[in-house]
Length: 500
Image (cartoon, rainbow, N blue to C red; front, side):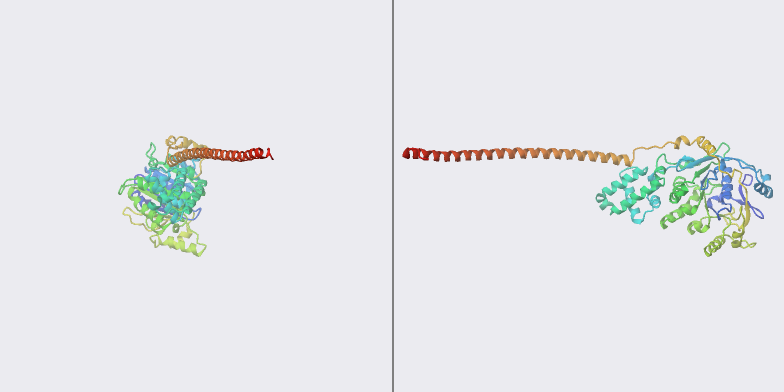
């Protein structure tokens, strides 16, 4: 809960209230714990607090229960007990709704979220397609050629056409870009078909999402909650993880340097954060670590939500200053090792054993350590998380649709735009080439037919002359023979009265 007079976020209460300094929020945060231990409640309390102090928020809704933020919460005995025990009424705690915009990659339960193939780039796209190093190299060549020829790669058909074009002209490009193996081209084409089956043909297109549209406020100055519906998207983990990485990199490129601020410009919550790093090559993990480290200077607070801190690479974990650790279970040696690793990431509290406490905290309770105003990690404390003010239940489809229809962004993103890009240019070029080839073929056939006729005519003329010569020769021979015979008869007749 944001305490305006203190300009702090009241996050939890143990022996004393635990406050998060807004100026330290861009040192990022981690919310970890086993399923059902209260991570979602912590996420909601933080997101609501950021919104209350005028910071727009992005949250990935994996389970579908964050949509209730657009409706006020309702009383129950558990929340009432927390309100009374923590004295929240004194600080004006009250149920309320929050300004919300719903987004959905598939465009079913929110405004469509799209990006272009060119914006995604070959590195993230290679990861999304599951390409090896050689295949990624070929894909980079495809992008380079597209850029040099000013061919826009917007949607899947653009990329398919470009890959086909490069494959068909591999010999032409070999000296400039290196070998383009048909096997790599074929592997990319098959991977593109698989991506289309996962919804890639919906995700890639225009109008492309402008993340600046997420930095909005309502009439009361509260930051908008941008909720990404992920129940269907989460069924395709690689697409989900790559999409989140794309957003993070886009934010980094979009926002100017801001230095030290009294509060973040934007707060990001990545649920199931381990999917950002699963099966990611080392080079990509290094890039994520770099973005996480540098994006805080641009005023972005990034919160990773996952079951176990070990799901996050150490290089990224080292950039996280604020931690909320809910319960972990240690049933196996591997689990026990993970508990010890989580305990060692906190600044020790002499009042209790951190490793034991991680296994003992109940639902809604957590071990909390946040940075103080000077950026020094606080001693870990065992505390209860404050209750959220908005509804914990998912809203009905009608309520959600009403919110979507009322969004100022609907007119901008509702309709798909399909402008001229690589597919159209290459298709037109192919058609022109085919027509030219057809004309050349037709001309060649005409020329061939002409030559054939000329040959036949010449042959016929030659044959006619030959026949004439033969006839003349035959006639001459016959005449000679007849003449000889006649001469004989005549002679013979003359000498022997027409002897036979």
